[in-house]
Length: 209
Image (cartoon, rainbow, N blue to C red; front, side, top):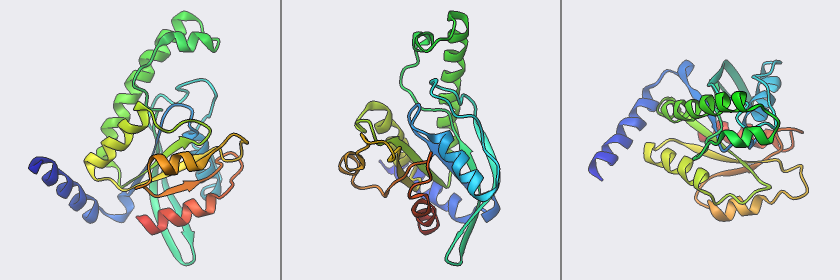
């Protein structure tokens, strides 16, 4: 317990004294929650260019992607940071899941291998984050091993986070399930696809960091 407490204090001091130009905001979440779609939305809004390719195929993002010097502002407040899009977190990666979406067996096995490596890299990068946006699919039950693992890792490292309930444009979305499941965290419901409520997310980032 003492070691954990000291580690949290050290992590907080590191972020406190980090130069503003070095601030990193990471996008974390389960597979296909819309992290890259959100990354593209943020980058288009403030840089006029996209971050990467989004896809319905699992683990389309298998490597860390970084967009530097993203500057957001609202009501006189501004923040410049490096946006980090990470591979979707999964507790189990089976190549057969890729076969089901049309990939050939050899390609599916390679993708599974790359996806596993991507998950490991994502966890390693947590120590470099000043804030994490945990992107969750608001059409799904939020209580699962993946989400609990992500939040547990963030809490253990004392990293500021905001829950982003994505896909609110869909009729079956239910942001209240996320709120009830993880009530101690700040939550913003958005649609990264349509831009719905995206300004509230920007305002929240500026307030929380």
